[in-house]
Length: 231
Image (tube, rainbow, N blue to C red; front, side, top):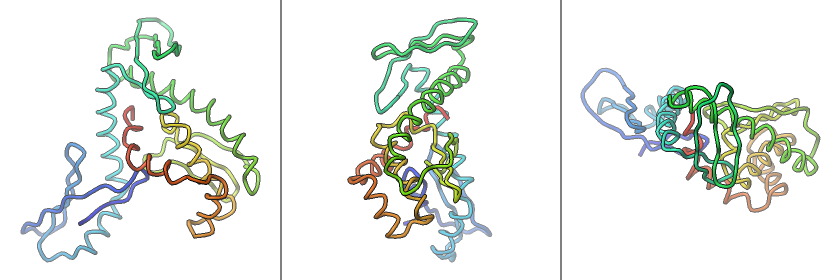
């Protein structure tokens, strides 16, 4: 059985054997298929997948984005693990107001799915800047050393990163997840301030910062795809 590890969990790969001269990769409807000659070893095929990891992740992300356009057209948006109805109105200037269980979004040409998705993404990124700043301030007090800075990331294959200089970047899409999931990713990156690896000592630091992190990590593996609904 072949699989490819991505930040939101492993992706199963369908293997098709048939007479041909080379190994091919096909992605259709979010399913990854590897087409290979009968004699090619599984270890070699796994290496091919690893080498094409970013390419595959990009195609899967585009598939999620297309799904996201359909979901946005149906009027759903997620924030902090909760779903909100989307109510649209035509306006010259873009404006977003969250009221109860409804996000009121105004702007030009929002009937076009691409414009609507871009407007939702802009609002989510604004929410991410505000919410991430609050959570980072709370979590930094527990870290082994202070942060040098932080920013948003739009990465397709990583939920967060931490440089050797202590700069953390968090994927803006995490603002859609429950706060416990965001906290896990923050704790993960803060642990890198002490250990720039994934050694047992690193995971011990994650556990010190955030006991019981396993459930949040499992949520990402099971539901991480849903955070890419808007691209």
